[in-house]
Amino acid sequence: MKTTILQLLAIPAIIATAHAAPVLDITTVISEKQADGAFHVLSRPSIIVESGKSASIGKTGPGHFRLSIKPTLLDNGSVLIKSVLKTDQPVMRPDITVAMGKQASIRTDALQLTVTASLATK
Image (cartoon, rainbow, N blue to C red; front, side, top):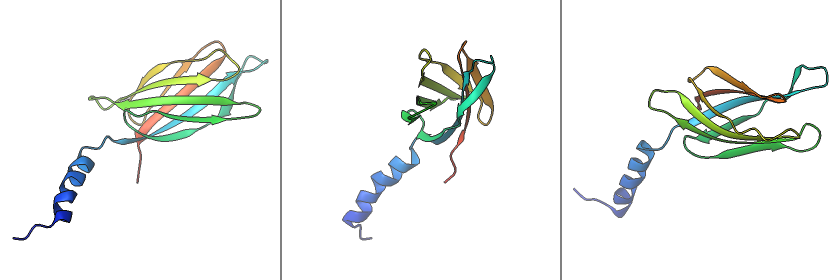
């Protein structure tokens, strides 16, 4: 049986692909408390990111924000989401654990962050 260099190079690529971290779809809702006392949605950003990697998304202008997240798929199937949310309000740095496909929220006096985690579809 003849083995080519390309076949030998393909083996590590196949092994690396088999052990790649899952890609997660993190959907968020960022809300800010307004003068009327109610929380109003600033944005509904979604981020596709590999488990254990960091990603950021933001918006400039009115209602500006910067959201940085690092989701990690845990052994029990839930996702730990470490985040930093910057707006005109004091910085929010919540760590949220959410069951896959479920929603979780955390709120301060001025901000609310709601997250949903699922496996990204290809």
